[in-house]
Picture (cartoon, rainbow, N blue to C red):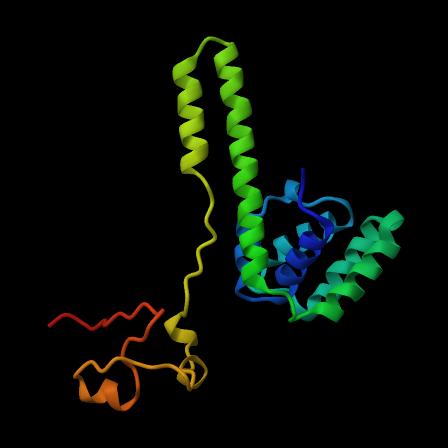
Length: 193
C-alpha cells in the first residue's frame, strides 16, 4: 500500500512551492515512497532543495521540463501534473498533508519492522526479533514543526488581533502585548548576567 495519487500531488505541490513544508518533505519522504508520474519531479525537486536550500517555486517549470525530456512516454502526464499543481498552488493544507505522510511513513516503518522480526523468529533469534520491533516502534516518525525562526519574524504578522496575552509584569513587554498567550509556547531568552 503506497501513498495515494491525491496525497502525492499535494506533497509535490508543497515540495515545489512551500518553503516550510517543502523543506520537511524533502528531508523525510524517501524517494521510493513516490511512484508513477510523481517520482521523477519529486526526485528533481528534492535535489533542488538539497542544492539550493529553498523551494523550487517558479523553477518548478524547469524541473518539469527536464522530467518531460528525461521520460518522454510520460511527457503528457508531466504537463497535466504541472498544470494541476499551478492551479492548486498555495491552497494545500500543509498540516493535514504532513500528518498524513507521517502516518504513512510510521506505518511503513512498523510493517518493515514486523517483517524483519518474523524473519528473525524463523531463524531462531527471538532477542533480535524483539530488538527489531523495539527499534521500529521507537523510530516512529513525528514531523516536527520548529515554529517561528527569530530572524524571519515580523511581529505584525505573528501577533493577531484576537490574541489575549497574559500580563508579565514587565512594562516593555506588556505595552507591546508580548506576554504569553493560550496555546503558545513562550520563552524569555537573554544574554548571561
